[in-house]
Each structure stands twice: as structure tokens, then as C-alpha cells.
Length: 67
Image 1 (cartoon, helix red, strand yellow):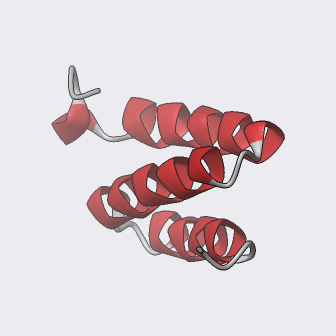
Image 2: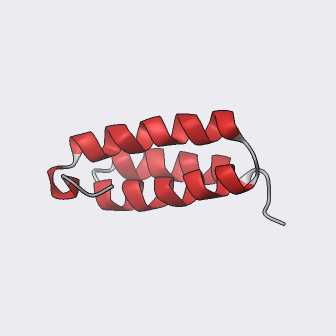
């Protein structure tokens, strides 16, 4: 069983990566957090994370078309 806070911790880490200009890491970390939130049945968090993932992708030209 996954730690219920793990998705939240990954979300915080992804924000730090994004603020540091590490968009690839922010995207990878957020993808993992989305998967964990869904596995935990935490739909509201999964939706929030998905919106952040979409934002990170929109801000990163190297991820154009990668979904």
C-alpha cells in the first residue's frame, strides 16, 4: 500500500523542479504523482496534478506533443 502523502510530496517536489527550471523533472515527477493519486482513489488530487502537468507541458517546448 502506498503512503497516502506520497503523491502530495511528489507534487511539492515537482513545483520545486519547475521553479528551478527543471521542466523535464517537473513533468516526470508530476506524472508519477498523478498515477499514485489515481491508485489511491484520490480523484480531486489526481485532477489537480493533471492540470499542473498540462501547465508544465505547455511551458516546456521540448514536451510538445508528448502526452
